Image (cartoon, rainbow, N blue to C red; front, side, top):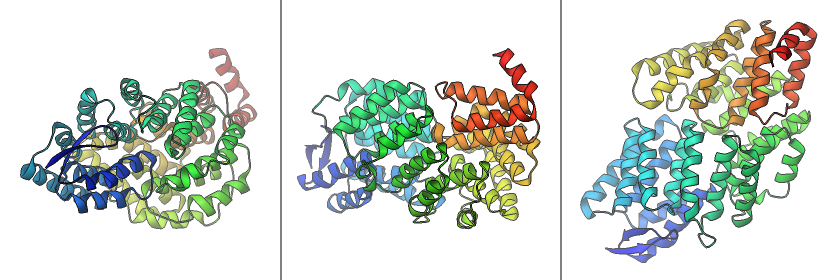
Length: 458
């Protein structure tokens, strides 16, 4: 075995330098969300079957998919990685990646983060570890930790580091998610200048435009940069989703439905992130009074097959949205029972999130679908402050915020709705979007005194 240096300057132990080309392609592909990344990783393992780090990375890729059937595959990857370690040994970095996968399989994504951060303490320039830490924190909704991690490692990425653009994209996203919109846009734009295929950084800037109610600026930003996301795995659907959000903000509903049919749900996958794109967009449209036709049906059909997943509460809540939209009462009942079992089992960190805010949020969605708006409001409002822990981004979770507000208005809780709108607007940079304005108009017509009291309180 020989020690080789990879594209990020990290030592790997391998039998031949032939592994470097596909390994470097795997790492850079992962940073760019490139669809061919698994192909590169498969080639790595073909050339170097005992490369424990690569097996661990394969397992981490599996668990990040948030699918029950991937758990056994991830466990197999862990066993293979551990066996490889015992056969040929490894350096501390390689062992830390195996530890990271073992932690997740033991129910502790935070243990995964700890393992990655232990690498970054010694090797902050290790962009692979930085991205795994970033991605895991995203799943946990840990935006502050995400930012701290990026700020700690960023000085190690000089102009000649091949991952500098991608790390700037991650930093941009962490800035946006912690409310520093101006710095986020600057970091994202600088990152894209260095890594034009970085869909994550590009989409981070799109988030800034969404949070600051500037859809025209967002459309201008995305226009002509399609090459930055068309090479991606299913993440490309999510960038199209962002473009549709901008059209929705402008009231261009036909454009939204066209993007939904031709881009967002063109391939009709059952990946939870794709289901989240679809369900949250249809729900937003319906809240605006748009007839979405039979589009709920295919999402509900797919969600019915995923009700027992229980890997991520973020995924579960979007499956439930699909079932509510498709009026699948029996499946909703079954899923609610399974969510309660998951929460009661208390197995791992994700079960704690299923218990809180998961159960109350799910009950709120179920009640909304049944037209019991007071119950929907009370359940959803009770966990508003905890919803970040389900993971995802502010833009993704905003569908639950909108449902909370709409449920309050429909239940006659106008002052409470106005308070949430004010809180939401302040959180989003202080610029009310068209959704907020429209709901305040509804409240003003139905209960002007509620707005008057709210104004006095402010």
